Amino acid sequence: MKTVVSMQNIHKKYQGQQIETHALQGVSLEIQQGEFVAITGPSGCGKSTLLTIMGLLDGASEGQYRLAGIDTQHLKTDERTRIRNLHIGYVFQSFNLIDSLTVFENVALPLEHRGEKAAVIKEAVVEALDKVGMRHRMQYRPNQISGGQQQRVAIARALVGKPDLILVDEPTGNLDTKNGDAVMQLLLELNKQGSTIVMVTHDSRYSGLAHRQIQLLDGRVVAEKQVRQADREVA
Ligand SMILES: Nc1ncnc2c1ncn2[C@@H]1O[C@H](COP(=O)(O)OP(=O)(O)OP(=O)(O)O)[C@@H](O)[C@H]1O
Image (cartoon, rainbow, N blue to C red):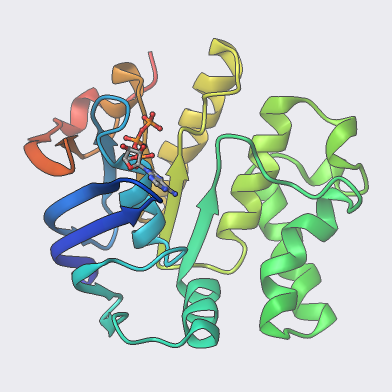
């Protein structure tokens, strides 16, 4: 089994005008291909910071991070962007779809950035939209579909490029229970089909669906818990 994430002694310090915040204080963890990992912990403990570093949206202040075997420490900005595009899919709480583009065009973006041919893009986008049940809304714009549907489209955009890792930050935070449950069910199905998923969540009902929960407190890993396979269903 391939190690997708390998972090050794990761620190992150944010330098403000007056104060420095030591958001991550020596995090070490490994995530294997096919895992579904939930990152939990109280507000301000460093969950989003950890996800941001894992997703190469920001660099660590100290420590070593290997993504799919690639040492990310000394990457230049354009290399970091290229590797992020190839290896990472990101799903945000606020969906982050572009309102002026159609559903199809939004999902196509990661492949366009890679310079793929139109025919390849079309096939992959239709396949991704099929997976999330949104093919019938291909020509709609984000503001013409519901929040739950927008999150499905955002998930299609995250998986269209077949990344090694899908990072999900509070995916149900802007959704009601019914739509939140449906999005979680979809993430579980994608994981069963082989996607490696790391999800930040406050909701213990959803973190219990992961294979493994990693609990942070004050920028450190304080507990890890495995979840029994039989328990992994949305209630
Ligand atoms: N860009 C930034 N500049 C300065 N400080 C920051 C920045 N981003 C986060 N922090 C600080 O780092 C710490 C960790 O923040 P982070 O957002 O990672 O926590 P979190 O666990 O995701 O919180 P929440 O559950 O409320 O979203 C907090 O003290 C926060 O104020």
